Length: 52
Image 1 (cartoon, rainbow, N blue to C red):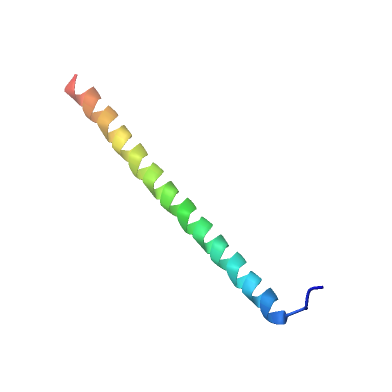
Image 2 (spheres, rainbow, N blue to C red):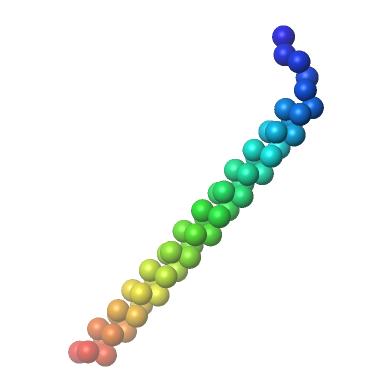
């Protein structure tokens, strides 16, 4: 039998919020990295066209 403990609910809520924040941060970091890579690629294409 399990005991109903209100602290468990609070702990689970904190874990869920922490996991959500971590995923959001990771997603934003990936977006930034992808944007920077795309900018570098665009710059390289532009340079290549100018050097022809």
